[in-house]
Image 1 (cartoon, helix red, strand yellow):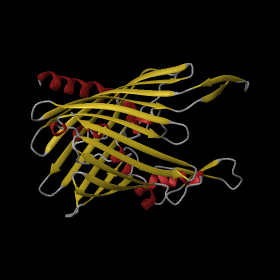
Image 2: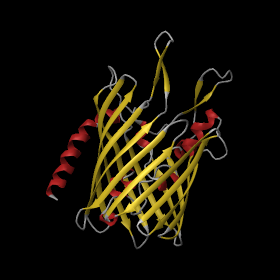
Image 3: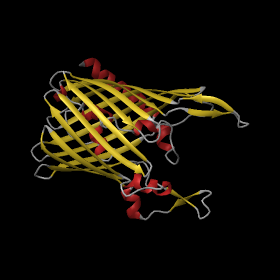
Image 4: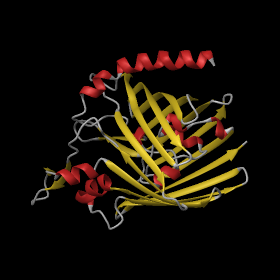
Length: 336
């Protein structure tokens, strides 16, 4: 226990220092955006982001390390997602209770973008290659009180794009307050604090640092409602549409309400028992981002379900952000 606490505070101090340049550079895009893809089909069904969901599911640690706890006992989970286009995402994670008030987990996730043809500066094809991203992770959580829990998630990230490669390290810090009497869960997370240790080329690429807040509330029946606020380091989240000629993208000006909703992800869940759930999610940012790329009626909407049979759990989620591209995610978990 002493080792885990020393590791927790040492890592917090080190990575909080590394995170400073990331906070200052929130006006542009980041590298390593694959880190924002959920590893949980349950989360994906609830809109793709949920840091306050209470469930004995080890894959939730990627959303918020404070959602990991001794209630998982020993659990092994694997994830697979057919992402948009030819991209495929896979992950595996093992979690274990550490006494009555703690838990740890290790995991790995892998994203393969499919085969791409490379060209040199003159336009001559140089052959095909497969860009890949890999992240190895270690997590620890601790119950400070019966209702308050904190957690940390350390990540080592390797990317390889043809002859270019890079290595980065990051940390997530999370906290969760859960009131079982009122079926209320509140969370806050600092995600992807860190930086590159090895660059692709001359310039450093920043990680997708984010500050998130989340709430999940039972509605007094078998239903619960969630809202997750993302990208809280900046207010303006622009999106783009093609101009009249269709030759370039033009930044669209958002009203206060539209910009607010681009920060929010909503989820609704029906769970009549701990053996089954059905979930529905809505992400307005995905819907508005897809307005340039021929979105459909279901853009921004996700659905999913989960079944628990003894020690075996299975979950699936589906979304169709583009009329020609859909995503399917499947989780399998075993309580050992």
